[in-house]
Length: 324
Image 1: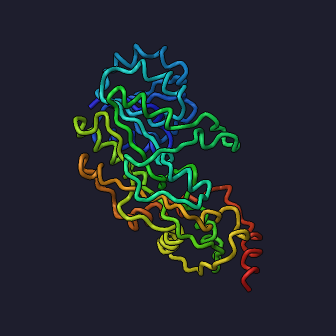
Image 2 (image 1 turned 135 degrees about the horizontal axis):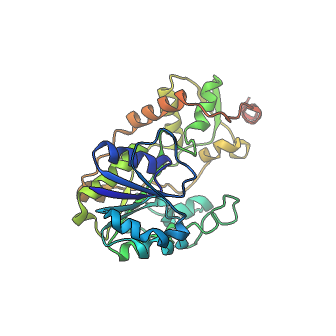
């Protein structure tokens, strides 16, 4: 197939492009040209800012894609700049489970939780722009502004769980691994009972491939994409430590004493559990065993430690002192 990938040089997009090329597809990657790793697989590159996508519409048509995968549509403007200029082919856009009302209640730590697991028909957020004013340069981000236009074109929306794995820019396992590298034997935690859906980047890519292979079933549909087994926060921490060959005691401390990077273990009333049954039934999506996927990711991150990992554990020691 001829596949055009919008944003394909980092994390999910990069792994997707690698997989498509490896399986023999002809791939065009459309991106700004700011991130183009030397070891990226060989394929066609088209450099353009999303805002100027109309200027390369002719080149896109000349490439003649069978499908277009938009990995980085974050705002309404992102959609308006690109979608009108895409050919009438199978369109796939990556979205997020942060569109659900349950995510909003989790962030607010609301005492009236939504039932889980979330399905594709579960209530969506009431509020908009979940990261506005939080200093993340994502004031206009909202996947609820992205999904409708793609669905109107008969596109497929993949609502992804929290993605982890090699080259994860958010280093989602690092809050545990930095303590593993420091040989910390006691780690302060809260209840850590929240069920939060996750997914290895390879499984995120597999969901895209499943969509491409069944365009008839996927057209105009929304799919939750998550692991089969979902662990609590503290359960996930234990899996990471096991994969790293490290033993440490998770010590319960008051929530208000938790170090900043362990706040996710605090007490919450809203779980984020979601179901990907629809994707399994209609697309044949089959994610890897969660424990095995986490182990693969941990091995990679131990071999590629970040250069800026904090080594100060004063907050840990202060929290642990609360329970002595």
